[in-house]
Image 1 (spheres, rainbow, N blue to C red):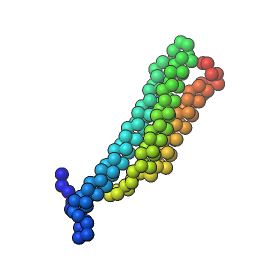
Image 2 (cartoon, rainbow, N blue to C red):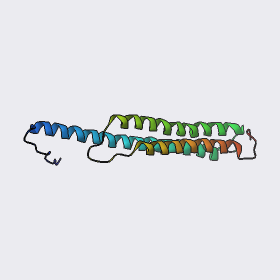
Image 3 (cartoon, rainbow, N blue to C red):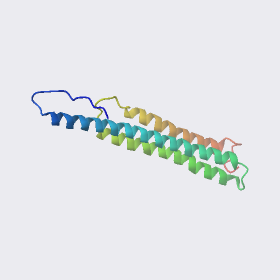
Image 4 (cartoon, rainbow, N blue to C red):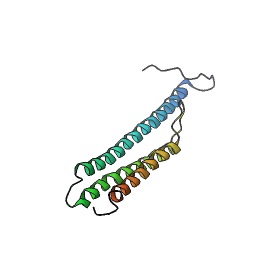
Length: 138
């Protein structure tokens, strides 16, 4: 792996510069890994919501009709819960780390995305139960 020479100061030992540079780069890699992990959890949340919608679509004529809605609701709400949990973990990790060589994503963006997904899951669940003919059981 190609490495750039660290900044040179005559006062500080070269090995100290290398150690500080490696530590800074490792912290940047950890931030990028956390961002990829957050994206993975969000994909999982969207997949859970999609499974819930698919289950309701495929088994819409299921008998009793409320059972298909209940199973779909579990998956959809689990997707919203996953989004919130991923956001909390990402923000907790970001609070511990400092970016050195690149600009990390701000934590409000994590919150905005996660809460939007969770709100969408709740609205979708309400629509699933209410928008057919107004009857909760049908």
